[in-house]
View 1 (cartoon, rainbow, N blue to C red):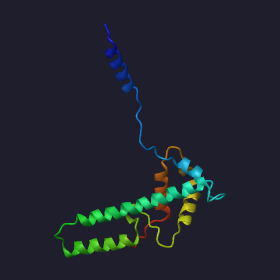
View 2: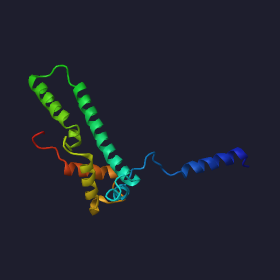
View 3: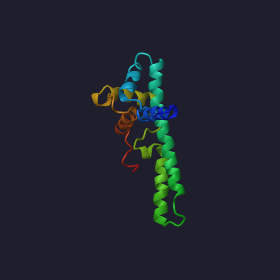
View 4: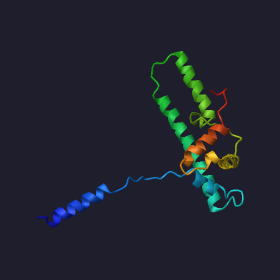
Length: 157
């Protein structure tokens, strides 16, 4: 009736159908990041506080790297034949972006803003209910806070 190979095949097949969908990287929730950041005031050199600072610093570094690549790709893809006006607009935009390395990310930290100041603003905003959630990824909350706290000036746009 059933031989061993058919039974093993059916077992393997049933195991494949019962596997849950998994993700390689589970996003860090705002609640988790806020819990690490809550230790910053008492022990800024502690493991949790350092995790908080490095996460935020890594987010900003990623935005800088992304903006650089976006600008590089935009300049590479420029048609070889462009009008004087098109070239002027492209060069003005390149100068504006070079002074604000996160311009395309829609937040501009400027040269006088320290990482400590940025981290402390983000931690303060985490105390607000809308930013302390299990369902909101930390990256989304950090991005929203940076855009709200450090908007690029209208003169630059």
